[in-house]
Length: 307
Image (cartoon, rainbow, N blue to C red; front, side):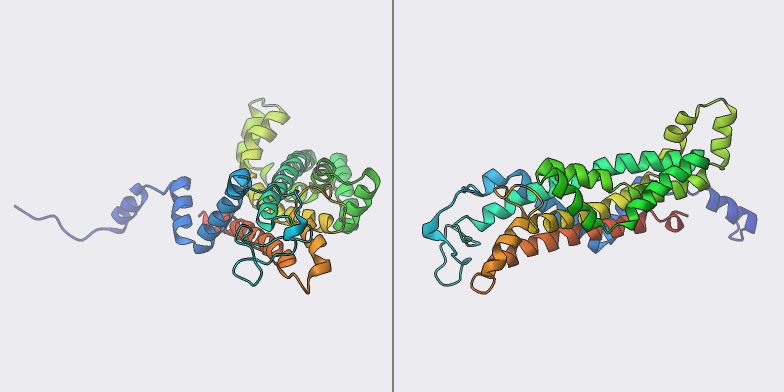
């Protein structure tokens, strides 16, 4: 009986290669996640911070706004004159630093995520409309975006909040209504190239309405870019919230936030370093984790890596 020949023609090799199944997007996503150290680190950081925010009443027995002047300016354990019941020390009013940090995580994540959702919905919608219809609609939307970009972002926030007043709701609203520009510009650029593709022309020839084409056929193709922009926007929004709270235009003074802790601790920075160092570390680690996740998502969703 003759053995099969090991010699294979080029066409047969090509046929074999074609028959090989490609990896699905989900399996590729998980494969990249297993390989990426920074992605795993970022997810762990975000998970821990979120867990602290959710379980804040369980993780500490102290109220973040309750004062105890008998225990004021106690350093973290194991420094001298520290108190074991306050592992991260107390502030100038005797409030527990650990309690204020974990409760402050709630405010930072709430402001970051909620304002990004608001600005993302506005920016993606305007970007889709501007890129698809073009003409005068595109000119109007992009000129409004250019006007907003002409003002320094922090100065614009300060001006608006100085008029309507500080507060958690006002800050989320202002950040959401002014942060849509980056989404609109990114989405518009992608829609300009997608609207002439064959699948859009086919949908149009079959009688699909403009709104159906925009939200059914074009929007799914720009979601990856929106996710990347949003991940970086959450980090920048957390820093903006801390900056506004530091300047006294964020939330109410009684609300524990990382920015407010920095502002209150600057007067005691020489004698009580933990008042500014610990909330500063919380901000830095959280923003680092979110930025690393956004950087990894940008690499994963890069069209050149999907080929």
